[in-house]
Image 1 (cartoon, rainbow, N blue to C red):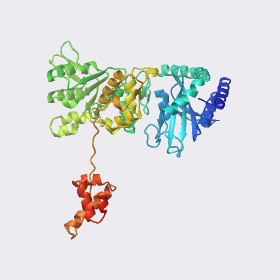
Image 2 (image 1 turned 135 degrees about the vertical axis):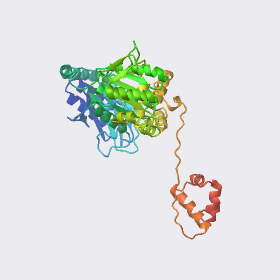
Image 3 (image 1 turned 45 degrees about the vertical axis):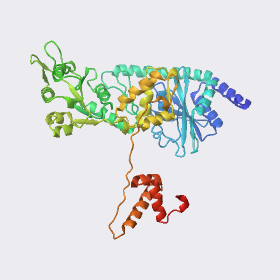
Image 4 (image 1 turned 180 degrees about the vertical axis):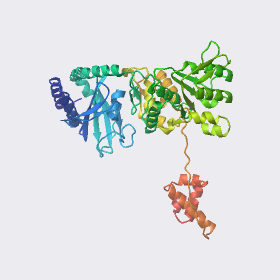
Length: 503
């Protein structure tokens, strides 16, 4: 239970906030209250704008006019977008917090959304310099209890901010309507979010995927063929669709053909059509044709695809019709097309034309920072905020340790099953299936220079070097040396390095 003094402080704060609709006072007072009650190094409050951008508005009781951060940028942007608390007890190594600006001495940070009727108006950030400080659910509960007591002033501030932002939003919409069709689609490359004109969602947190998407956006406007390399399920088809919507062909058709799903004859008709039936090339005229797993095409179909790309003309599978086309081809490959060319399995001329623009999509295990964001997205897709499920720290650790041979598709399938099966709010590691962790064998490399030494001395030197390399761990050293632990102890005893009582 809160003490009488705490109740009085909270009542006083509520009165101050209700009596003043100045956001500078509101957010500074909020930061000051939590700074005093938490006794932590620093408490910051970020205002969340109507478009999802954020700015630092209060710090330790002082009003701040901070710079605006684009939607989804920084910890404030992440919490505002996800609409739930996030804490990191190692801010310098956590991929979500590592790139946010804060004082160097800060070790841990807790961020909580300030919400009313599902709308986030601010985020509260509690920062600690204590290396032993471990934020957890109880800290979230404590702050949310206070925010619940302040629901009336928070509601008033939401309505005030809504009115203040309305004019800006209307002006922005009018400007968008006036310029629509003359500009490319708006895209925030740092967050992977898109406006309503872009119908494909791609979650990106890791530096690797953000850089890949940035490159793809630059190449999208060049109107050359593009080759996307990457493992099965890594997100190549989604990126291909994104490229279409970033390009000047966004208003044209975007047709996807799976090159592994049909026989050669059926695929010929699917791509080039026949009398009375348009093929994929004709269907995508003026737009984009995505050829998924292009390495699976036969030599004859590779030749027809190459001819269509070079001449701009397609011949139907029955040779009855010829059609002039203007199509951009984006091909995906889960293997190395260059190796297929060397083996004679893929036409070099087609490879050269496709490889004009090449983008490598990293496997999920190579961009582990995306695992949590993707897991939460798939877990709660189609759910409202009230019914959102949360991954516990142990579940997150188990997901991060797995090597994901099926990449994003495997993760999506797993999260969708868990979402349907787990009834409670929290998803723990015991809710996850058995996931075999890839073992990384540590090799012990010892350089031996030739010198005239007895075999006994060489053995002793090798054993001691192995122990030194493995920090004195005798169990691991014995395993590396291919002997039993007992044998290792006996040898150390014979060298006079351990006493008899240690055996």
